[in-house]
Image (cartoon, rainbow, N blue to C red; front, top):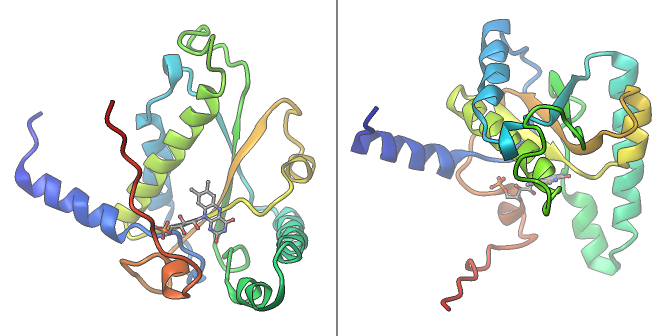
Length: 207
Ligand SMILES: Cc1cc2nc3c(=O)[nH]c(=O)nc-3n(C[C@H](O)[C@H](O)[C@H](O)COP(=O)(O)O)c2cc1C
């Protein structure tokens, strides 16, 4: 397969318009679209091809509500780390679309998967979590290509999420994703639009 210049410009646009989404329409994702998104994860790289991701579809309403409560508690605790007008600014940010997103996915990492037979991770076991993150990014970009939005929620207590979802205690919560059709599309991160922060240039060093 040889890629054409049009592939590069399409990919650039996809990357430029990929967003972390917190405002979802309540429109359900069609099963065939969801199936494609789920299948995209199989295309992700992983250390020693260990595929250590374990993904929970959180559709039980009680579980969803428990996750929302966990987020609200942790978000309030996070707000207490800021003072004065910065705290007010923080509280005005929308940092999760948990209530509206039709699909919730919890991505865990299995810390000792049989697949891959340990290859590549002896000195850097953290590469297992990196692998799950590669799967998430693959899923994120593929979602965008189908006009589906993804919002990453890390303002959660991972141990509480493990309890709520009743998963293997060894698994490590790597990401909790909201997935659904976005209310709007944008080529600027929401935190920039709200004036919370702006990007610094990447740090490059020559040796
Ligand atoms: C590891 C990780 C955790 C994140 N956690 C949250 C979160 O808890 N809440 C939130 O609103 N955004 C979260 N984000 C999204 C970032 O805020 C977002 O990617 C960043 O502001 C840049 O915006 P963009 O993704 O639209 O380019 C997270 C992103 C990553 C990669």
